[in-house]
Image 1 (cartoon, rainbow, N blue to C red):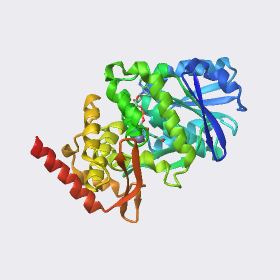
Image 2: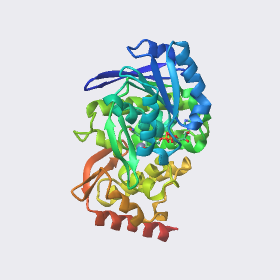
Image 3: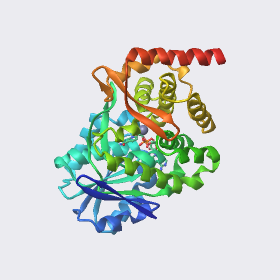
Length: 363
Ligand SMILES: NC(=O)c1ccc[n+]([C@@H]2O[C@H](COP(=O)([O-])OP(=O)(O)OC[C@H]3O[C@@H](n4cnc5c(N)ncnc54)[C@H](O)[C@@H]3O)[C@@H](O)[C@H]2O)c1
Ligand SMILES: [Zn+2]
């Protein structure tokens, strides 16, 4: 077990990597919480792990109940939030009682949002069960839901009181879900930590599970470091984590539910690396290495198959738009990126189309 502490403006919290779900109850007992815990989870995770968590809480003397959040990105809505607030309220959850988010990034984002607004905030405990949520979403306190025209447009910054990661839960993940998490690890490799990229290049997708403890621990440490330097994304430092996400969010919303979040980010990283090359920020090799790695992990890379206009329509509503210009994080070289690059929509469209022509010519 590894314990990593994240320090933020109002205090700090521990992130445990390599613990057991069945031990969550006794650990929560050590905190100054109320008697009740509302576990928010989706149906699939509830079937797999709901009972283990609820039993552990009971045995530690808590009252516990389950509320189902809905499945997948399409459940990340106000309607779900309203339904969960009803459930929490009917359970008479009080100020010191706990909301525990059990599941992937979707469940976590919704559950943490509910915890942040119910009674103006009740303690939130995060128990991520997907690789994507363990390496990324569960750390750093971004919560929220989507609007039909844009991702994560509603939300709060609300830090959990504790994060509990059982690596064993990752073993029940379908391959496609594991690869989603790898997509975010590739992102860290591209703009923050070159050694992660080499690690993925040297290892094979089939034996990756052996390295989950290491990958999760390294990723948690990277994200913690970035969040601590700029908790509310005010100084331009946390923004680095948006690499692949400006275009990625557009793709995710334009093609919902065809591409998962991680897959959209892969395509977004290709598009944004291509922009970087065309602007002279980075050398061609960076894109060749990225595409080679994405192919190795069977992740999507070919943006020429997408409709540029369909994707760019969604960028208009993105939070990363400032005064009509789009803000990008572009790679400089492997392991290093540039934040706050503002580009005109016309330039982005033209450059993307150039990529498509090139692929068509090469193909
Ligand atoms: N808050 C943040 O900082 C942040 C960062 C990155 C991503 N995100 C968000 O995370 C979301 C994507 O996360 P996700 O891919 O984890 O989504 P998810 O919560 O929808 O989980 C994916 C699927 O895996 C299933 N699942 C979860 N755990 C499982 C397990 N252990 N075994 C088998 N199946 C399991 C779920 O039921 C679901 O069907 C996006 O909405 C994205 O915006 C948030
Ligand atoms: Zn992401």
